[in-house]
Image 1 (cartoon, rainbow, N blue to C red):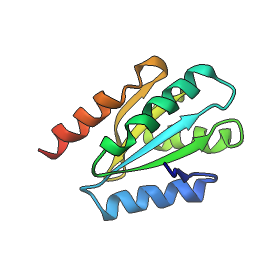
Image 2 (image 1 turned 90 degrees about the vertical axis):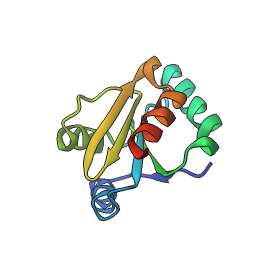
Image 3 (image 1 turned 180 degrees about the vertical axis):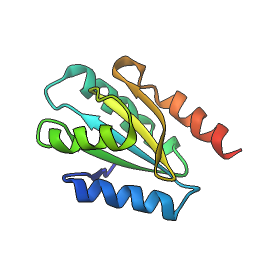
Image 4 (image 1 turned 180 degrees about the horizontal axis):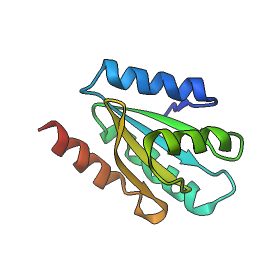
Length: 117
């Protein structure tokens, strides 16, 4: 899977803008720590299930390289920073978030399915 990268605040603001322009589309953001085994495990679970996700664009943020961006995202979406963390954004707002072992691709799929039905 090719992830869309978020490397600066402008990248994230572009995702927010796109989410308000396409209010029926979900945007997934994975905050990843490359030094954390739990983060690597969560990333692998998402990557193995990615083909099952419909109607969502995924982005990844390397927390070690871009902690300032992560902090800005947390502030903008009013969600406490955690790592690893999945945020689902729709229409400019975080509508779902989970962290650590709570990151479950099946739960994310069910959440999105329930929001679109």
